[in-house]
Length: 367
Ligand SMILES: Nc1ncnc2c1ncn2[C@@H]1O[C@H](COP(=O)(O)OP(=O)(O)O)[C@@H](O)[C@H]1O
Ligand SMILES: [Mg+2]
Image 1 (cartoon, helix red, strand yellow):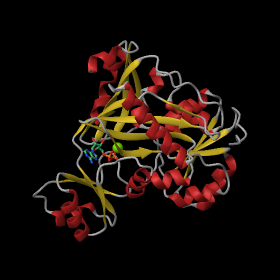
Image 2 (cartoon, rainbow, N blue to C red; image 1 turned 90 degrees about the vertical axis):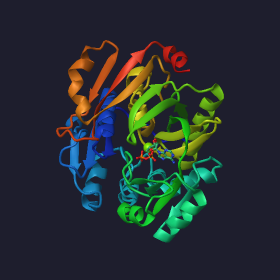
Image 3 (cartoon, rainbow, N blue to C red; image 1 turned 90 degrees about the horizontal axis):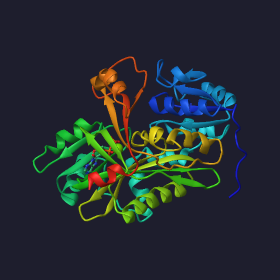
Image 4 (cartoon, rainbow, N blue to C red; image 1 turned 45 degrees about the horizontal axis):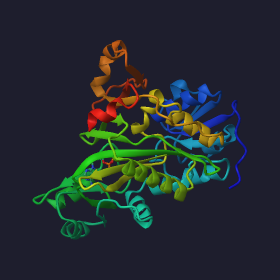
């Protein structure tokens, strides 16, 4: 594969989206001497506080998109619920990494499940649901407990409903307010893990160690690095994420969330073609963070080594939890990251704290 020309430091990286992932990408970009231009529909956002330029406009505003494209050397994205058409529009004007194929596959749970199953990669059993009668048939086929999820626009457990043997299906279907959904069998998992890989435009790639994720109320609570896994399972998880990145022709970072079943199988839950909350630990515990790696990948620079120099536990600071910032600052092993969000809402990710431990000291404890 021929390598595209690198975008040298001094260039400008455009980012679609202005959340904390964009903020941390912008900070990494600044460290390497790049400028960042954020495109977001929101007036105030975490990323714009630390960026050189911002365009506040709707994603459908083609005039604003064209102006944005003329000012940047490359475009990346920091969340996947961006409509595909503006991304395709930008692709005609400037390199967009990752491109619309990765975005379209990852933003639709049905397309995503088909994508993995077509590669021979297992997921929970699932069925497409487009009506109440589909839902009844799907429940009969898959059984309960099950989870009904909107095909699009879900995050942090939003757009999901658990279904048991006595659930009123008509009510659940009406409440979900969608025309396309997926019913998934509920997985009784031993643990949840995620794999994170970076891939450059020349096909070069790098993977971080596999981590374990604990969710509370469907929102990521902690990530522990490394996950307690056999070498075989670890390598299998990395291979799944690499295969997916390769098939998507992805340039940037790809996170794949998976369940580990009690009998030691991996089932893919979902993926994100961007830096991921379960990769925040890499800022403080790895030689190259997921954010630096995105910058390197989209600018066609050599990828950095993802080597872990410390074990780590990352805890999300959700809502009120961020009020304890003074306590975290007093902990010698804790690294605090706040996202500059002015409004504290329940369930809102306000920051995270990563606690560092000596290399390989956690592996033995968890087992
Ligand atoms: N089929 C399932 N079986 C068991 N738990 C699930 C299943 N689907 C989702 N969950 C739980 O809900 C969490 C959030 O669901 P996910 O599909 O990852 O949606 P989101 O886009 O909100 O992250 C998962 O990390 C997991 O803890
Ligand atoms: Mg998830």
